[in-house]
Every structure is written in structure tokens, then in C-alpha cells.
Length: 107
Image (cartoon, rainbow, N blue to C red; front, side):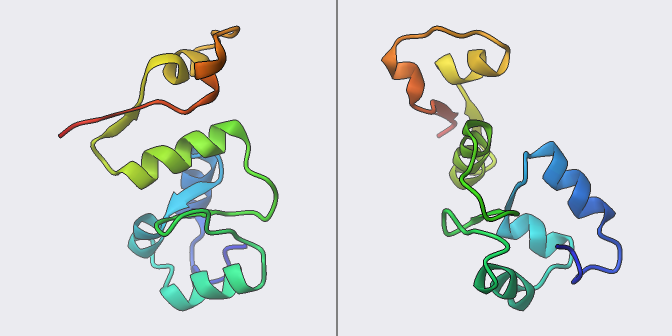
């Protein structure tokens, strides 16, 4: 999965911390080039659910991964909010609106 890196440790840690979701910018800062990313996507090892985020696997994303995709896509001034942040703390049983992923984004 990380053959393009001399030392894949940082990418493994990032992927673990972010539930297997990374931004293209994060990959670039770790030394993973555009050609390597394109190759992984073409080989269907990785997915690109949005223009700037990648799933480092080829299966259906989990809810937690969808949360990471939303936060990374929204940018550094974004955070999970409302029901979504409570869900990460273990709260359950919210109304239907809790099915959406809620973000707080600074202007």
C-alpha cells in the first residue's frame, strides 16, 4: 500500500489516526507524488471520494470515515459539531437529523 515511500511509518500513523482517510495535501507533505496516488486509484486500491480526499482502501466507507472526509474536505477551520460530535463521544439515539454529518466552519 505504501510502496512509494522509503519510510511509510508516518503515513501509517496518519491513516490510523484518521481512520484510513487522508488529504492529497497530507500525502504530498509525506512525499507521496501525484503519479503514485493516480496509480493507487487506477489499480482500485485507493478511492477518491472527493477532489481533495482519499480513502486508503477500496471498500465502502464507514460513518467515521465519512466524518473524516467531511472535515478534511471543509479545510483546517472545520470541526465536527452538534449531534455528530456527540456521536463520537458515545451518545446514541438522536433524531433523524443526526444521520447527517454536522460541521462547524469558521468564516
